[in-house]
Length: 385
Image 1 (tube, rainbow, N blue to C red):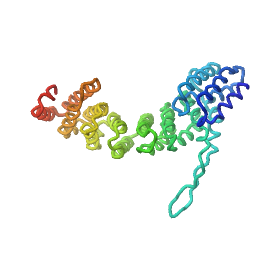
Image 2: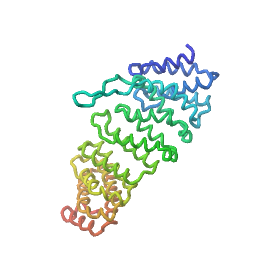
Image 3: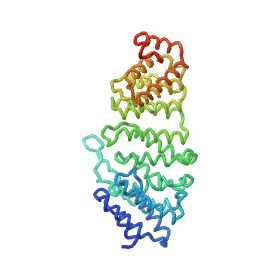
Image 4: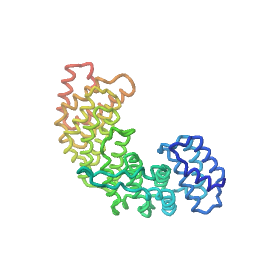
């Protein structure tokens, strides 16, 4: 079996049912039969296949598969002189021959009127879902596309990125692709592609408890929004929209620890972007932070994240946060009192001290009064405050 035949056999493999051993054997055959004398188009096309099995974010790529495919892709990049990254020509060729074939053949849902509701007619699973390698190849290639070449590959990359972000099961890949897309910040801003991506990402800022890893999906959505918004320099209204999403999602996640860490951890990010304008959401954010600090969850790492947000809020909006000093200090005291004697608890206490120092910069008298009240009640607990 020749090199190109072996490559196509690997590409056509149903990765949903294929064993790791079968995949590894085919990759080894491809590596062993690699023919450097082939024309560039064939080598670039086979590089897309190697890349599809090199991306560890794909479910079908095990550590062993990644190791073998990565060695294969490195050999191909050396032959093609692509060690500094992909150019638009090679990337577009990969998309044309390994990606678009599956996305363009997938029909969009058709809608008809049923019982006074607009409901979709099921069209079956899209072709690209039946051939996950095309998603892996696209994400791998986009990650290696030179930033300066993105503007010449928009027509090849943007439709696939939006399709992935719009799909519930593959949304994580669409969000990742969106972040990769805006590396050329000037082009993303001037061409409007960044705004298109941001509109798509906004629809992803919703907690889905039925997702396989809901906290990771939510974190990816917030990260993608921040990355794209920073790249195209959005105005304050866009950041307020992110604040709205934080408050809404806080109501959805309940007391789920991982999800609370994601939502709570975003407060410092919007504080950096909004500065004093975060005052519009100060009451809601203080409510989130104090709830985490005071709740019976008592997860040290989560409480540490919450204490970090106190510092961020105090620095961003010192004129207004002083109003909440009594309730915030009381919440910090609850977290301090619940901490243990391990290293994680020591880090929590250090973060609480930093939060208190930031609060003192806003209203030293109010903090002193709140601390004295605590010391009068439990002097041994708060003597270092």
